[in-house]
Image (cartoon, one colour):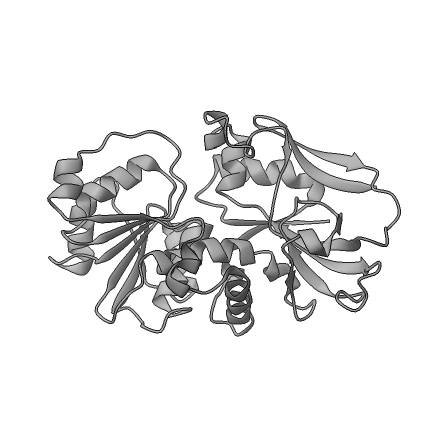
Length: 336
């Protein structure tokens, strides 16, 4: 039997049991090591806020559906794929939170890991890729100053990639993370990044001037997923700067194109999708390997971001914490 996390309706999570039978020769069976809840996409689907609820042309993103796509496990039965996936091989798969999975190597994006010791951190790789995509949307130069707004899991990954010069040849002059919650700011600092607690009463223009001086940041990354925050950043962005929309902004918002974009010569770019392959950029599979290499070397730090370790049967509680207490919970891992 397989135990898998299922969103049966909006705001309802269950652990479903399914009979997947004995291992099959044309599939690889893998038992779970750990999986990571995506605090963006998964919560949007579970709470009914994903774009697919309004845009019916989108075939994915509504309940009922299985939850999760950041899953790490160990091969227990390789079927006919012994040469490629010998027993004991650790892999990351874009599959739901579950205690066991069968997958077809020909039709599944598989990331091989070098051993079990750090395999639980491998589940972060799909989220690392999202966070890293901002640098392909807005590559820094030697005099670039970076502001990353929102220090949830994706923002934390993005800030580290910029601040530590990961994946990019040119280290920016300065990279600073901003969040309204001191706890998330502290986590970014423990990962080796400069970060400050933003004042909710101040405009972003005032905040940027206080941190960067009159010139302000040259690259601003919106990592909250809030359209209201994105609009406020457009208003507060310095002239000729670039605003990267890294978070998935899902609600409509009104903006003054003339004042906030046209006269400022503000560049706005979305960072999801195929941005990392633009202009000969790093292909996704190579990017995944490089990011996990940075985790193993201690350059990309994720352990301080782990706030919760729960069993698969406690999945509903993990989602509740992320939805109701986001300031206190960043990376929630589920174990079989």
